[in-house]
Length: 303
Image 1 (tube, rainbow, N blue to C red):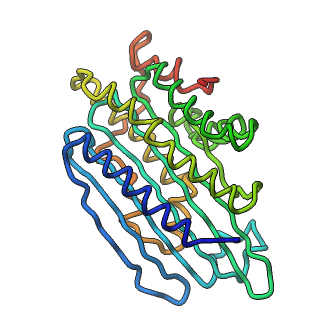
Image 2: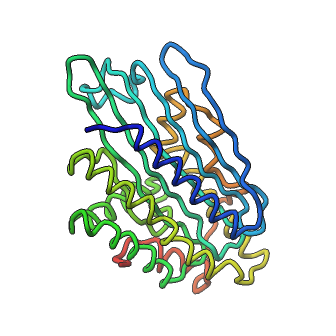
């Protein structure tokens, strides 16, 4: 049985749990922006954006819930999926990006979502998607291993093949083709997932959402007090530029949201508060900055 209300209830509870935990660590409060999209011929929707800016720990942290319904997908979204043409749809999910103030604390992204398309007289088309990935500036091997082990152990009850497959998918997805480099050290990524049936596939998505805090919170707590200076902040801003490039050029969620008429303010909350670009900059050989490129960005078996 397809129970979209149960998915919505879970996602709202997940947003509460994550924002409550991060607010307690930071000492600041998330601003809550509940919104409802004015209905159009094609699209309706509502959501709840929570944002913490200028905090002691988080320079910018956004956790958004959205639930959008429509009478038909935009042509760009259904061009490669003819079975979705002329179907009503609903898409809901929780998406977060945390940009910590301290350059020794990695940026992190997590997303879990559900898509359902219906048409009278036809079976529904549905799937789950999501994942999480870590973007360090000054990598620590034990942190990367912890993050990946948590992802691996979370997926293990649903099939031994899932973590290797979803890790590879993440490595390939979060890759800046025009730069020839990864965005970070990856994690897991999956989309169009329905292989286990609705109930069990939902269980898997829920397990991924529930694993986010165990995967990231220990890293945040361990690195948040590491000393840093202007050099580290400059490098953080430079690497954040790569984050912006990926989100605006390649990220499917960002592109779908903007192309389908979604709420731009919520879609673009993933952007860092500050970023920079330099012409043909190269790190000094043997430096901590160079180590990111040699020791962390190349795909490897962290778990």
